[in-house]
Image (cartoon, rainbow, N blue to C red; front, side, top):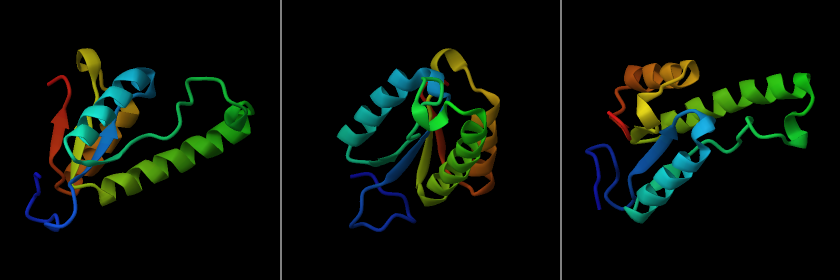
Length: 114
């Protein structure tokens, strides 16, 4: 089991996935591999690029987007490490903000496509 100096020896490393939900399948694949490696994985929980009743109303969608951004920053707070899922090297504006936030906290950051 891989642990950082700040990770208690009795708990697996926590990895948070960051990346555009347009890469939902790649996020799921990264989640699978990180879980199989023995890590606790925190990942985006909603793919707002797919239709759903929770965000069909524009007002609801905007509130939910803000809530999801807040929650994802809290996931970064909890994580020992960040894994950016960036097929083809793509990093969108929201993911750039998450990377900058993680870096400001001194979190190690890995990329699926360096």
